[in-house]
Length: 129
Image (cartoon, rainbow, N blue to C red; front, side, top):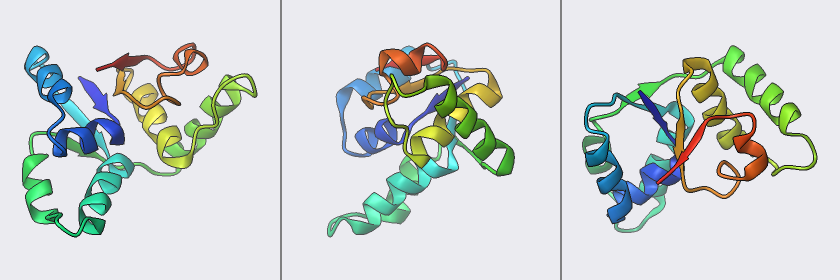
């Protein structure tokens, strides 16, 4: 199982080869799409004059959307606290995505500089694509 962040989903929808290559290399895995990451990708489609939300949903249908709630939010805050001032500032979405990875005890797959930051990787299992 792998947790995919918003950057991965947006890149996938934009046809970035590295995302398709990653999925093919891990075709036996189950892919988790945290609801905040999924929302960010779909909102991006909705904001794009040429975007198609229904098509984007269909293109991401291979992933399982994972709902976040109060426990995930609390865990996101704890992760930010563990990273501390020496690391990046995790915005709400990235914090929730990191928390989903920890909740499920599985890596977060990202190319986002805040999630792939050395200090973040000390407290969250992150794989780069």
